[in-house]
Length: 378
Image 1 (tube, helix red, strand yellow):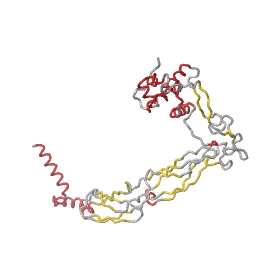
Image 2 (image 1 turned 90 degrees about the horizontal axis):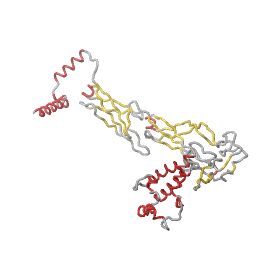
Image 3 (image 1 turned 120 degrees about the horizontal axis):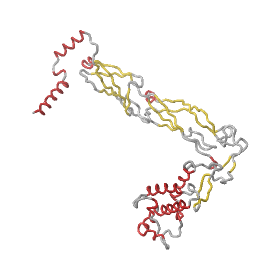
């Protein structure tokens, strides 16, 4: 009696495509003949899970199996005569590329013809000041990276020679091998998938087609750039192997915290302490903005702590636009310390002659609190 296909894969009958693929991949790696050489039972199990997956991953075949069971594929039923795998390629080959990639020590790796490989992308971390983010700048950076070898011009072969077509894979970079009942394709072990071999490598790059050098690059930092912005320099990454295209360089910007200003998008905030007398009687003070100019702030009489004053257009420029944010000055009132005897006497005298109108917020607060708790106790 044939085993239930869902049971073979170890999944529920309502399993979705992702669950089917995951279960199949796990079992295929476990029972693959390469991992179980000479084990007939493992080969049998491998064939069974392959048949189960090929049926259940196809919506039409799965519907037929759910309704008629194995009888749907016998005596001329759908899929009859197709053998194990039904001849399907689709997602099946993708799964096995993943499996065999892991078994060979790595995942799938695409190479261009002639063994040329695209160079890796590089990352460079740059810190700038808030003033530099405000005005923009052109920065010079030094980046250690791989560049195309100037002796062999990236071919990896000694000048006067050239790479040869790999005799093992005939230049395809892949070889096919039979594994019991199944034929698989693997990376060519002779050329490493490049399709070419170098018999006389370049003495400077040792056949790699690239060497490590430190380059100086110019980076344009636009005005208004924000913390965490990424700038891409196309083609300035690592050089490709054997003349392959270079990768890109990504510059990740961080803006150093400022001593006086905090940034929120295009707006700036600055907390300014003023004396109690200035807050009470009113006054003026100047603040220096990021463009180096001074802006005057007028403090009206009776200003309270936390009061904000808006300086329109004195914030950060908005990236790639003509707009500019605002600067908000938040007032902090400084309480006098280390009073002299005379200062203390004056403050005490002021307290004695003060009325409720002088301190409406504190007077009102305590009055409301008293009324609230009196009401609760009734």
